Image 1 (cartoon, protein in one colour):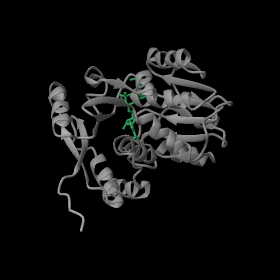
Image 2 (image 1 turned 90 degrees about the vertical axis):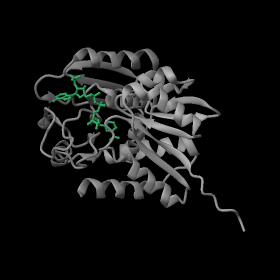
Image 3 (image 1 turned 45 degrees about the vertical axis):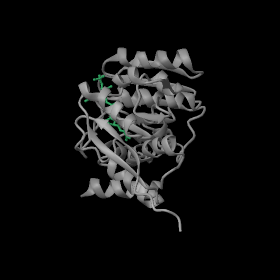
Length: 283
Ligand code: NDP
């Protein structure tokens, strides 16, 4: 008879605030469904305690952790290695601990890409991203690395859009430009994929990014990063135009699955994780 183990594999998350982050429920549901003796511990770690939290994780033999606000950039100075896309994005949300070494990854853009590929391959496509924050930056870099032909980033503060465009132009074969977003943005007719990467619509089913929906062709694939509510006003407007849409749940689920795969070499069940999030968001 094999010996039972009462020692779990440890993973988790460092952020602050962390109380409202449902990732723990999603990942532990995935662990359970796969029969893994692993735990994901949601830790509230303020900025000044990140260094000690990392030392604690290494000391306790954690195999990896996610990090969110306010640590995604601050963590860089604690790492021994950086994956290529995390280096280009300039932020890390997933760290693997291997033999005491810390290896930083960014799974936000990869999670989006995995989700996008269920509806279209971005290779050779023209992409328009609304917003130029952390999510936009991760999505732009991964979509460029996946072979997009052109990526246009529009933002109120145009310098942030131009900064992302420069990273893409300097490091990938994709062409990119950053433009100012003022008034209702008219979608150029050569766009294949439109992505809302702003927080507009988060927790508000009526909020709507300023876009001229009359200019949206029905052939455009329209995606939103907002996971809650999954069916945003932006996606409803796109559906009214006849567009195929993609909600932000897939990005959230897939960035979690990709992180676990980096730590444990196992892809968790996406359906179980999606259902867990839906139940939480609809409660
Ligand atoms: P940031 O704060 O880094 O960036 C927000 C961006 O949105 C900025 O470019 C900002 O423009 C723009 N923006 C904000 N409000 C408005 C507005 N009213 N009108 C026009 N532009 C606006 O946020 P993140 O990139 O980190 O996150 C964005 C969203 O993505 C969040 O809602 C987050 O929950 C979601 N997200 C979802 C994930 C998922 O797995 N589904 C993963 C990561 C993020 P400006 O620079 O001009 O201020």
